[in-house]
Amino acid sequence: MKRHIVLVLLVPILALTLISCDGDVSSGFAKFLGNFGGNVYIDGGLVEANKADVKAATSTIAGLGIGEGAKTVKEDDVINDFGINVTIPVGVTSVMKPQPKADQDKLKDDLASTLNSTQQTAELKEELKKPVSDERKEAVKGTVAVFNSTIEALKKELGSDPNTNKDLKDAIDKLKLDEVGPGDTITEGDVLLVQLMTNLISNTIGTLDEVKGADGLGSGLDDNKDKLLPIINDALFTAQIAEELSGAAGIDFSGQLDLANLLSEMNKSSRTSRDDDDDFDIADFVGSINNLGPELVKMFGMKKISGVYRWEKDGDYRQFINTQQAYRGALEHALTFAEKGSHLGKLKNRGLAFDGSSAIKYLIAVVVTELNAWEPENTKSIISKTITANEWLATGAATADTEWVEPVFDEDAGFEDFGKSYGIDDADYVKQIFTNVKRINDVAGIKQLSDLIEEFLGVDGDFDEWFNELIGKGV
Image 1 (cartoon, helix red, strand yellow):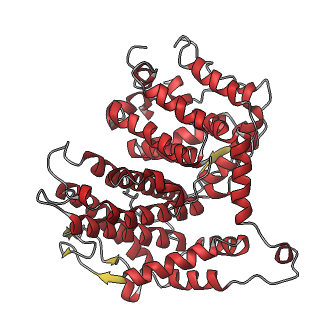
Image 2 (cartoon, rainbow, N blue to C red; image 1 turned 135 degrees about the horizontal axis):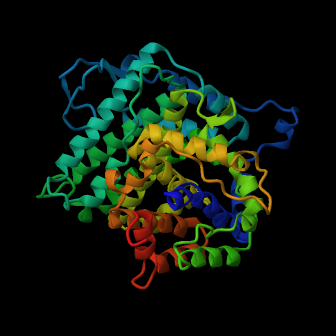
Image 3 (cartoon, rainbow, N blue to C red; image 1 turned 90 degrees about the vertical axis):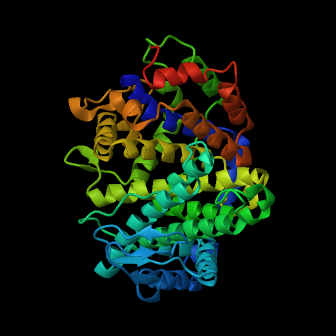
């Protein structure tokens, strides 16, 4: 179990340094950030920023989930607003409807223009933190439930045979969101994210229906590849907004590290004795960990309360998970349809501003969503106890002498059964995650990382040995 914890929670942080260590990538990322930088006159207070875009965006968002944007329903109603028949679950009284295309385009234009300005982006994020009315909360709650039911209905429409359209089913399944609890606070950001996800699944169903061949939904894609581009655009835009809402977009990936040293350490760790728990030496990565650790803990939304790093409210954890689910799900959606349409080479210019850190943001989202899908309460405890036991991750106070401290977990945490109970012991499923990392990195990352992954997954690579260790076989 100890090595599993280190693998799940430490390796993504170490991997961040891999992405941030190359000088060309760092300078490229700085250039990317510069495109969204502030105006010196505005920053100095000499000129007032133009806030027309953020005002237009927040005004539109404030109208989501009410009026014409919502629909009153009752239990056992059958609706087709998302493009497929779905029965209304118990307790759902209102749902948000997918926006008409013109309204979708306006919302995306306003948001994109807002994100072009540092000042407007900051104001937008503050507005999106505001809680919404009970009426809109009920609409979000109902929409999430119906959205998840729509995912299940769509998977069935794509074929009862598990191997038919498996890639599409897997990608679509990852769009699911955590349901809203009675005490959860719903913010304007939650409303926006749910609306974008609703638009995405509705547009996806519409396109699949439009191009379906003789074998039904999911067939006919090979003959209509260009029609998949709007789905890719929608998915990448949704991922970008989820990234902004999660706080990941603001993380500084400027840490420097010797790439050759890290590649050597990663290679060595996969080949050394599995009896050695000290595969990685923290001393080799102190600078990057101290830069990135506190920002990651902040992104998680965790605070130190009575000596423990945790989420202050259950709703805070749900919001964190939902942004990670939306980011991961939307990216995998885009990658899957890009592969189907032979559009992987066009991703760099399609909505999301890929940079050298995108692959690792995806990896972090995979880690937390996989754990959450296994057991949310245990996941909260595992992350909380791990950060608390290794506070230097949150404070940026690691030194060359710092050692990893294994936290003490409750006996019923059941982490040893993670693979068995959740299904992460599917080698093909895990390989697909690595393949996605490579695909994202291919767009705007470090060639050495893509080469490393390709070698790792190859016939003579170390994937099988690593995977058997992950699930507790052969070690």
